[in-house]
Image (cartoon, rainbow, N blue to C red; front, side):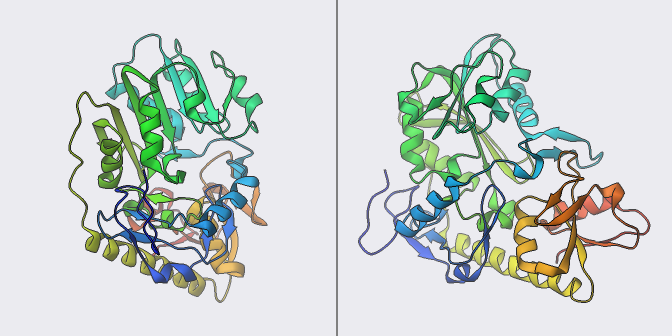
Length: 384
C-alpha cells in the first residue's frame, strides 16, 4: 500500500520512498490516453528510494484524471476500432490484442477450456481477441462504468459486464489480463494484490503497459500514474505476491508484456533501481521531446508539412506545431480517409506528390517506417 509522507508525494511502487519532481515537465503540453490534446501543468517525479517514475497522486492529479475519464472515448480516431500494429518489414496490419494474445498463447499452456477476465475491458477488444485464440473459453470483463456494456456483452461466450471493483466479481479465473490499465492505477501494488486472490491455482496474469524508455512520448500522457520499466513492474508484482513467468519488450513495439502467477512462497523484492540513472533518463527524454517539437515547427515554418500517426505522438506534436501541420498520414486502414484534429488523414499511398512528412516517433521506429514507405515525390523528415 502507498504510505503518506508528510509534505511529499509517496511512491506507489515501494511505498516508502518519495518522488523527486522533474521541474521541466510542468511547462510541457500533454495528451490524454484517448488521444486528446491536454494543457501543460502536470507533474512527474522519480522515487528517491527505488527509481520508479510516477505522477504524484495529489488532489490536482486525481481531479484531472476524473475530468479526463468523464469524456473518455476509446479509439475515437477509428470510430472505436482498436489500434493496429504493423509488421516492420511488410507493413501488414494486425489487431494489437490479437498479436499480443497470439504471442501469449505460444508462451502459455492454455487448456481447451477455461475462464478469463479482462480488467478494464473498454469496448471489449481484448475479450474479442481472446475468443479468437481460445474459442472454448468463457470470458468476462470489468469496467468502472457501463458505457460499453452492449459491445462487450455481444461477444460470444462472454458473461455480463461487471461494473465496479474487481473484488466483487464472483469466482476465480484461469487467465486475467490487464491491457493498458495498470499504468492508470493510483495504487498498483494494492490492485495487483487484490487480483491475486481472483486467480485460480496455476492461473496466469498477463499485463501490458507502455514502455517509456522505448517511447518518450508516453511520459506526456496526463492520466498515466506510473511510467513503468521492466524493473519497476517486476518489483510491483513481487511486492504484490507474484512470481514472474516472463518479461518481454518485443511482443508489441514500445510496450512491456509481463506474465506472472501467484507465488508459491514469499519472494524477496528485487533490488531497487538506480534513481540517479532514472532521473538522467527522464531528463534526456524531456529534452528530446522539446527538440523534436522545435524541429517540427522549423520544418513547417515556411509551408505546412504532413505528420505521421494519429495516436499519442501525433496528437501531442500537432498541438505543439499548430498551423505547421497540413495533414496526417496513417497506415491504419480504419483511420485513413477520415479527418483528425480538423485535418485530413491520408493513407501512405495517397500522400500528395511533393509533400514532406514528419515521422515524429522514436528514432529507430521512425527510421524503419521511412525505409518501408519511401517513394519518389514524398520527402520523409526524421526526428534527431
